[in-house]
Image 1 (cartoon, rainbow, N blue to C red):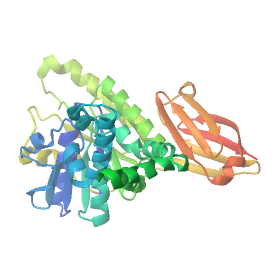
Image 2 (image 1 turned 30 degrees about the vertical axis):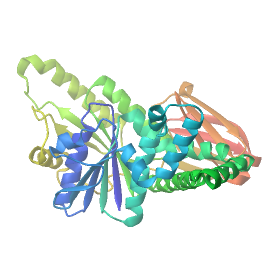
Image 3 (image 1 turned 180 degrees about the vertical axis):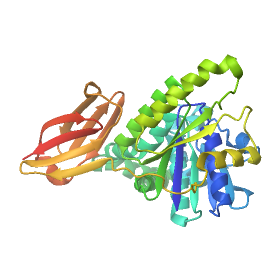
Image 4 (image 1 turned 135 degrees about the horizontal axis):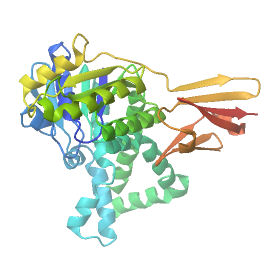
Length: 385
């Protein structure tokens, strides 16, 4: 099964490109599911078809779904929801507010991951196309398993075994299955970790960045690419959307067309060797399968939409006489933007306002970080004995 996730700055046309990709793949014979993980859903508008929290068949080989976190909690994780609800009420929070708070921060993203884990385990589809939220929320989605694992380790370590004992006691005396909620939470985080490994496999998952030929949008796309590399995800294409055709808009848009041409050249140069695909502005609002089919053909031309278009290697470990070199691809940054620290077998990398923890092999606990340097686009870390 293949997974393709579309990301980019809000308003660049991710939903349109995701829907067009799914439609083209379905026409090519792939049983395809297109999913919206954006809380502000617009997938149903793009397809011009009402959608539900469950997959709906909307064309031959094509299914569509819009996530709903409350629906997902009610259907699959009701024990955990009851656990959180009971804790908040016990702390004096009123019923209505407790119901809202029972959906923890990050559960929207976790819900998406858990549905994807279900489909992956069942091999329900040949291809899943994800219409994600804007870049920041996408990065939250993709980094969630790491954050969740760290949180679970601290919250439910052996030191907190008393929490489990108390919840079993509560169930015995009140009938409220709090211990089942904790078991459900354990299972949830195990699934999050499992599906993240799927996302990190370039043979399964590709991320495609949608951008427009505009200065601020390109900066956001470059930033997204840097962070995706930092987290180890494979970006197999950049798609430039809404390109004004030659002569479009007459003299009024002549300056805008010239600036677009300059920015397209910049995108092609700076994202090498990642393939750059292009789609012209349609001159009207895009919705419905007819226009989406036209866009899908324009984007991919003779390519198969579900194919892996590019694979890069974001990490490399090299052994030398003193120890090891650890190389990580981090494009579009400068030395001043990177700070790196080592704690035992963990490397902590700060890049702007993002932090990434990388767990090294256990023997690395006994190695010292001699130095690190940035050789564009590689961050090189020297670990010595």
